[in-house]
Amino acid sequence: MDDKETNVLNELTSYRCGAAVPFGARYRVIDFVLSNMVNAQIENIVVFPRQKYRSLLDHLATGKAWDLERKKGGLCILPPDWHDHTEHSDSNLQHFRHNRHVLERDGAEYVLLTGTQHICMIDYQDLFYEHLHSGHDVTVVYQPLTTPGSEHDNEMKLLLTDDGLVSGAAIDPANRNLYMGMLILKKSLLLELVDDCLSRDKHHFFRDGIIAHLNRLTVGTYRYTDYLSVINSVESYYKHSMALLEPATYKKLFHALQTVYTKVKDEPPTRFGTRAKASGSLIANGCIIEGTVENSILFCGVHIKPHASVRDSIIMQRSTIHEGSHVSRIIADKDAHITPKRIIRGTSQRPYLIAKRKVM
Image (tube, rainbow, N blue to C red; front, side, top):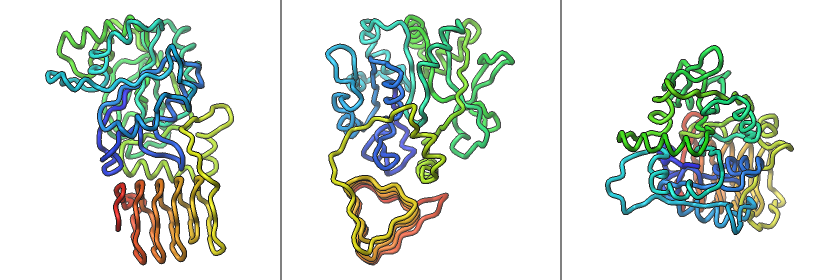
């Protein structure tokens, strides 16, 4: 599992990698892909963080929250080798190069590769069985977009044959076959393709290892049509977060068939003051609501003081909106403080972003 740092989330990734960004009132982005793997009974999971991973390490710890704290297998976190000054490859190649021994000593025959920016609840067991029955060398996951958004414009799309095989890939806004950054193949083939890329001084595994070898590889596809959020900008983060306030959308992601696991925080129930008003919102434990909250997402430990109002906003852990302040369409990172009698407004297209620990 690779977390490619892109800094496209601006201040939200100033102190953390994209995989550690909070999402949905109590989760982190990485929780969804980890939960998908655990639900599919995948027991050996390797996380390749790229940079700014202190928050990620704190969240994952030993993997106990996902039942991955084991003597054999379980969760393994492998940061990059900072002593290799010659390294210039991106994507997964850097990690494969430095940690080849980890793959070689693992007894698994197949490897599932995935990033973290595509939030979904995919059935990896079904993907694996379809790959086995197809006989293809590689199977990649894609979604045929019905209503493309701006977050899809710069994402990789697949060119497909009439038989559903991959014939190419390109960043084409007009193409609706969105590549979800997930693929499965044999470990032996993975190592062979990695060696080939490195020997030719190539830098991107999917483009240079898979697409460049379509003349000799059979690359099939797995069609995924359920809930999917692509988090690659502040705007897409806000858009897909706020969409969870719609019950139908929420049920698509958090349904009974698959569990989403996360690090448990032992917080007391949220306390509502005598004049508090709250409607249409996701509110985590440990909050104190003394003002008004409408159509918003509050993470644990948020304090909305008397005569303050929060509308259409995302307020992260332990942030405080002080007396008489009114905010709408903002994203406040952890430990932010809005001082008394402030008015802060953003828009749906450009939510106002307040950095971690900032006082305004």
